[in-house]
Image (cartoon, rainbow over all chains, first blue to last red):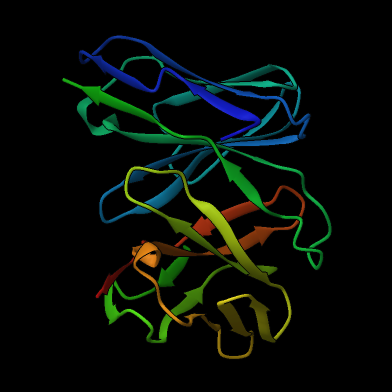
Length: 117
Length: 111
């Protein structure tokens, strides 16, 4: 999607190897998120960031870490990938706003499909 | 824990009207959103309700009843291109815009 790019788009790796997924935005939005999507589970929040160096855990954060050293980049790292982390990973950004304005809209990237063998 | 329930699949024909329901049980609630996702694509925002009532955006409308912890997405004049998955999502934290999503409803529109 324009303004938000994910890399790599596809990756195959082996169990035990480290993996880093990158999300880059050009919208200067403060809020960034990493979700994973699996059949039967919908989208589940892994980690999110509310500013440079400000991050917090989501509902499925075990086995993942994140970093945000610049406003435009949010990295998701799997320190030692496992087969259960095979998934499609979506990054999202939010311009934020008051809860009545509808500005709490997430814009998603195109996704990164990760396969852990 | 957080729980959002929506039907797994709905089928309809072109030109028809379909309603996708969403019930939720969450520890916080600031609003209900709907997202559309075509196969292999990214989810895209459709609508958001913070207050009770109906919000209309073209062929799509969304309804919220906070007292019933219930909302729905109404799609009118269905087109083949509406075949997609639809997710309801609860805004849990107004400070960080964190959304909790339902598992999604696959809508199949046939000719």
